Image (cartoon, rainbow, N blue to C red; front, top):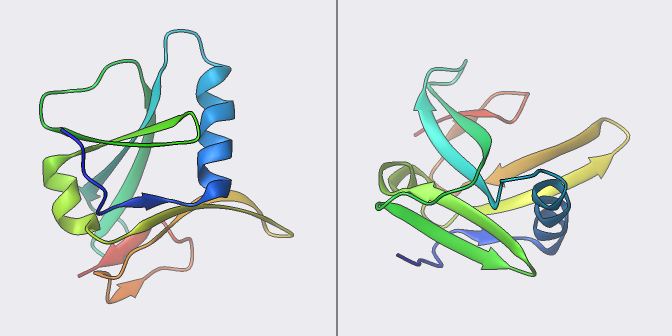
Length: 110
């Protein structure tokens, strides 16, 4: 299943391709939404080798991201970005559905 409602920035695609390329047996970054975190929901990032039947597949510049259909409900319209600045390096999700988020950027509420 392919869906373009979640997008990848060029910086995120480049970093994902580099990370996945360095890991034997891994072919994609899985992004999921879980209950918990200081704002109600949190993002989880894992390297994986296989897509599941309900995964949405996002591909850009040799990078592959998998998002399960339940997590997609909370992430529709979001952009996955990679930021490298004085505070460090991290993946950040710019989610239009989030009405609040915590300072760490990995937790949000709807």
